[in-house]
Amino acid sequence: MKISNFGNAPGVEMRGGGIAFGKNIVFEDLDLQLPAGKIVVLLGRSGCGKTSLLRLLAGLSPTATRRKDVIWRGDIRLTDNRDRAGAVTLMEQTNQLLPWASALGNITIGSRLRGETPEREHALALLDCVGLLDRADSRVTTFSGGMKQRVALARALYEPCPIVLMDEPFASLDAITRWRLQHRATELLSGRTCLLVTHDPLEALRMGDEIMLLKGTPVRLESIPTPSTPAPRNLDSHEQQDLHAKLLERLAT
Image 1 (cartoon, rainbow, N blue to C red):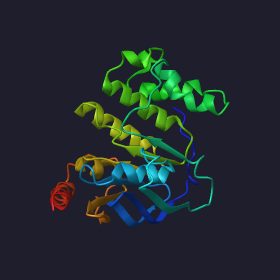
Image 2: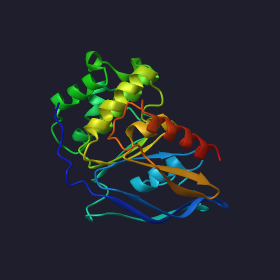
Image 3: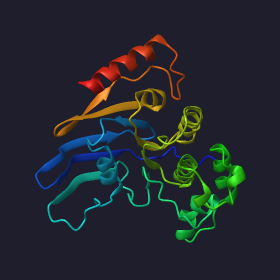
């Protein structure tokens, strides 16, 4: 499989990030730093603003763009000052697939929109990676929810962007498929700067170079200790089991 060289991936810095809907402040004056070439995993309870933070980093407007009471701000820059629009890819919770297109067509849509020749072999290798090579030419309307999510994951990994933002990329998958794809995605994200949102503490401990917790009202960011071994991890050591227990306790308080 082709693996692009992301050795020069930039880090991402956000200063004074804030999102509010009227008087409802999701977060304000939030600072975040994503180290270059590392996977940062973000945990937090439902509704605490994880998805909003991803969309802010991606440069996207909130859903309710026409409401005058929406505040959506943040001084966000890349550490090498390159254009953020061409450097970032976002995998959202909703798969955002084109229903009339095949799995292969969905994965390579970015190339076609940019006027480039799709890298068919690379896309097929990614479909093989997610277990859908035999369905490459099938329309995604015939796929289950988990299969669609695997196509969306392959599409995110196909894009030649050094910064990858992922919102619950494995949420719809069965336990065995999730375990396998966590391993492969960690390998394929090597060298990229990645922020991955999840509700699963084990997923965070398995994949994260760094783990952050979003909590409180308004929310704040807290750093969580990570295992000393490199990702992806099997999580069978006493150290990792102890960290899992501590992480659950931090989430619950």
